[in-house]
Length: 396
Image 1 (cartoon, rainbow, N blue to C red):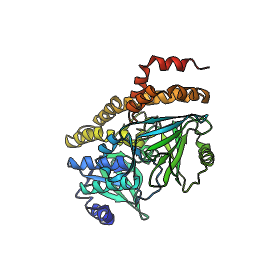
Image 2: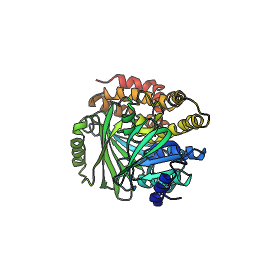
Image 3: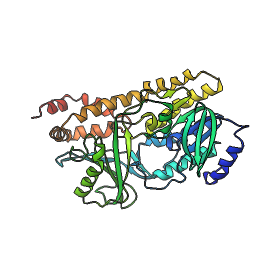
Image 4: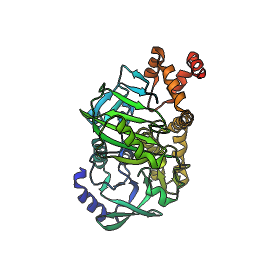
């Protein structure tokens, strides 16, 4: 079954609504919603996936950097990988840079449109009813209102899952507490020839991207994804244009979006469950949400399957939240603390820190233990190096 016949899927689903009610409706066909839908269908559940996009074309707001373990967790292979990243240049606010290089790939730059398309096609192939070009409108208990081509229909289900991003309308309709701590992320694609095509470039500084960072990520040949994130929401576009001008780069289409860097106070309310960016399951240190969201799909699948198959009460769904917070959620909590510490450092201190880290032994530790999914690991390793912290404390 292919999503190219979504009109047929939509029609069949409408005809069968009375005889074949859905057990789970997933709103949002990004990687998290697609993978969760596939997992649930593989366990025999009747699943409807509702996605507002009708096609998967660039440009995307996502930088498209994921770890090898994240790719494995998605179930896809290297057919979506554009290039392997083994290291990077990190620039201090004063322009001083350090070079971190690993002997093995630390990251993959992926073709994000193809990544999303293959995952949603796999969902259809596993038996999920996929509705593309359909907009979630509202929910009433176990009833979901969907708009498509100017007409409305309602679908019923025992469980509704919001996988519809940081602006989650599902969360809003269900009355979940809002996410307050957000960044604005902006990105464009530019012609670019990097110093090394297996390196990313990271730029720090309050005049560049206050309380976060800017990046240049090589993608297709001769092209880079350039962007930044900052908590200065209203000034984000100005910061990006200043950065591009400084680098003498000409932007093409600029895409922007809000990045949650805190998790919601709860992920479950009644028969509504949130996952991925909708739940704020995003790494505070990098703004990436694919890995923590995919980890959440494993936990949510176990809980949802048992909830449906055994007819358990809605209160059982909170097991998913408890499991998440005790596993990958604990790493995100450590990342949030690290983010808060970094936000308190001024540019002079950041200049000093990068100078101290620019030592062969320390750079090797960073290369060996640096992990975009678990950044606390390299911090804990550096804490075991007294000489480093003595030098850091001698800042004047």
